[in-house]
Image 1 (cartoon, rainbow, N blue to C red):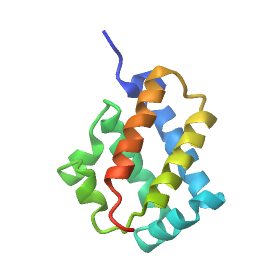
Image 2: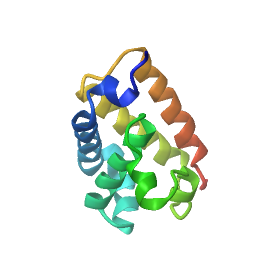
Image 3: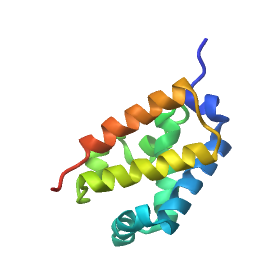
Length: 128
C-alpha cells in the first residue's frame, strides 16, 4: 500500500515545518518581495501560514482541514481576488523549491509534487 504524501514527508509536524520555512523565505529573500506585498494586502502572514498548512494537509492526502473550515478546496476561488502574474508564480515556486530542499525533501514523489505545483501556479496566473 502506498503512503500518502503527508506520511511520506513525515506527517503534520514535517508539513508545518515546510510551511513555516516556505513563509520564512517569502518574508526574507528578494524573490519573496512581491509575494510579501500580496500577502500583506490580505490577512497577513500568521493567517496565511495556518491556511497553507490546512490546505496542504488535505492536498497531501491527510486531514482536509481547509475543506472542513471553508467548505471547498478550489484554488481558483481561493485566489480569485489576488492579482497573480507569471513572475509571482515563478517566485512562489522558487521559494517552495528552497523550502523543500531545506527540509531534505527530494526524490521521485517530490519531483512529481514540484511538477503539480508548477501546473497549479501557472493555472492561477490572472494578470499580465
